[in-house]
Length: 239
Image (tube, rainbow, N blue to C red; front, side):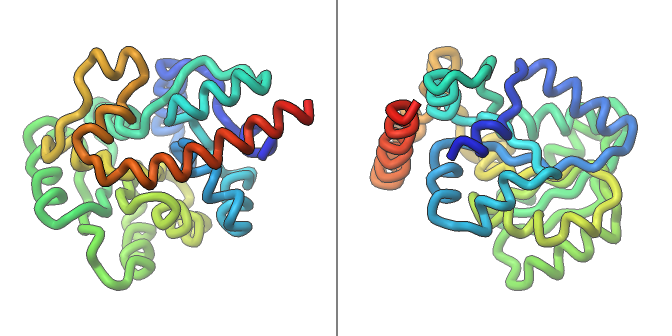
């Protein structure tokens, strides 16, 4: 698991957001993975996903507070968590400011419709070149279309690890653009679901708020986080 921690971006969120802006200005290609304990636990059970995460072209940021605390426990220099929803929001703001193009892929049809309206109202200078909900059958065909459009920002809301696997399969078809899997961020950005109050965010307890709002998440959360904690403890013992 150590190579996964080695891949984590350790800077402050504000510095990373500036890196994103610079990448848009210089038309770089970036593939971003927002990592939480479930990401690392999945990688420990899926070799293909593991190799995707440690690949040279992958940029991995610490989304979950569990990742940040584990990294610090193991001696890795990680400043703070960088939530995927904040990355998505910052990219839309950068696209607005720099008049860059955007493609939105994923979530439910009604959510993607709300995102389209939000783009028109809040980010009118960003060029929305296309959208597609996450219930389309041939997602690879959608990504082939996206690559042809050459957008500057591609936000993919299909959940881990499906979104990352899909992006990575088509990554070489992109000569530029920031491509990132954003999970359930469209639900929050569109207002379909409320983000945790600032009190929870400040204390790094967004995970608790989500569980309180959606108790069905508890089993999945417990399974992934407990397994992750045990692996981190074993790494600590081995020195």
